[in-house]
Image 1: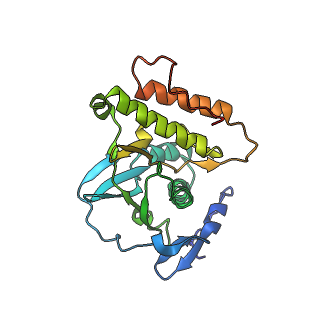
Image 2: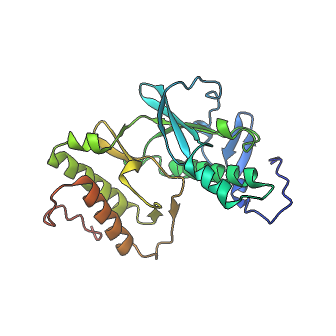
Amino acid sequence: LNLFIVLHSDSLDLTFLNDLQETEHGLAIRNSNLSCLNCTTWALPLNRTIAKGWSKSVYWLTPSTVIKRPNIDGQTFQNCFHANFGKEDWNVRCRLGLLRGFLNEIRMLLQLQNNPNVIKMISYCIPPNPLRNLEQVSIVTEKGDPLDTLALLQLTSSQRERILHSLLLFFNGTRTLRLHDFRRQQIVTVDGHPKIVDFDEAYFVGKDADFKNYYANIRRKLISELLVNYTDTGLTTSING
């Protein structure tokens, strides 16, 4: 795979690039179903920005879909620049960081594509020479409504409890999944159903890894962000259930 990378400083971990294979339509995640691979969105006009995060920009594509692309003006890239200030290859390092996150998110969405609490990925694009063409790396998903403070205020307590219960069942059913720094901003609703959208730093652990403490932290965080005046009665989704 010709990724044009020539580095003269300390070595970088490029092993994640081994997951890519060349196809006539761009690069694909190796050994994955190619039905999601679609680079026809390269030239689409992206005039309506929905959100800009630390590492991703989200644009309105159609009434029911959005497209995510790397945000080279975001905080992640800026932090990388400062961390590598003075290094000749800082730009390659920082682009690699964004690319690594996007490839990880694509990989995770492919593995979790049948889970009802995971945003549905419709297509993705990894162009040839992805570092040079980083701005064209794309993930197209169904469109959800952000679960922000305004949205929460419009929900009844029972609706918020249903969202909480659904998410707790999700984590209880995917015990080897770990989401880094999970927070409410990673959740949207589609027809009232909660779905998680950010997986750039997600990973799986072994079956013997501790789940009880991780689940307890997730549960505590979700309760604090979704419910008001909560008392620990009811909503007892057990980690043994």
